[in-house]
Length: 355
Image 1 (cartoon, rainbow, N blue to C red):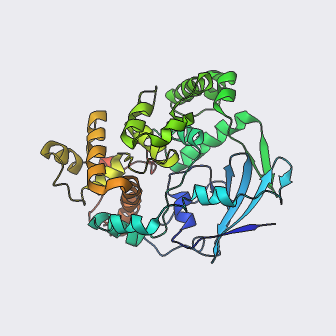
Image 2 (spheres, rainbow, N blue to C red):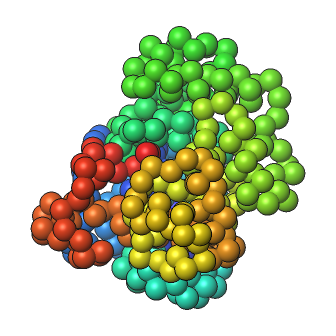
């Protein structure tokens, strides 16, 4: 039995789930998730009455799709489909349907580049993710692709040994920090997560969380300014300002957090940078790798420029420019930014938020 959630505001389910902010969603009966065809008309998968997505929310396996009225979903656990589980509130929370999206669009519309991104991708929503899952995913993001991050998180989920299923779809619940800490770093290393630092950083974070409260578990986090939350998260091993900003924005309701990666730097070239210092402006325009101090400086400028919804602006800018290399490869010129073939910094297999 499926349940339905009415959505009376812009929401593009496929875009929001596939753009690279959450990594446990995949198309049902599609283990590898096809590469999106950027710049073309919407594929049949997207839009109303589109295909189903499979994802794990907490302890449940969820199948979800978009309809004319909003969202339709089914729920499964270790015993199979559950007809008695109502996740309507969780769906509203996850897709941030409590945000005043009209006010957000109005404020972002004052900025030409962001307004163009909103116009091109209406319905792209920022997701409110579970903090531990968000942390694990972004600890796997360095020099990794969206598909690679998905694979890392799925491997880590197998450590829980808790299977949930729906029809012939079977997934694993993500283990909590205590369970990962108890299994030890070797259990993570044996999963083949790529960079040798990934198992170590995840284990250290799990150990830290298992011994005492971190920002992810503190009730006081709700009252903490976004810049303070980012700096506190950044104080832990293996994090850095980009990961800290992603976690603060996507799981701790810090809507002014502004992750700075190469895609955002590229997008900022099309924004009004007059309030930015000449030295930092030159750094942004050259799309050079930035120091942590410079990332913080850009984030501070973004909060002053975009205001309380700087994080929403970040997501739209990221998605506006991220398909650059696909458009250039297909058309010879990017229809978004008007530039020609990408330089060496764009010739990468990664299209995630990784550096």
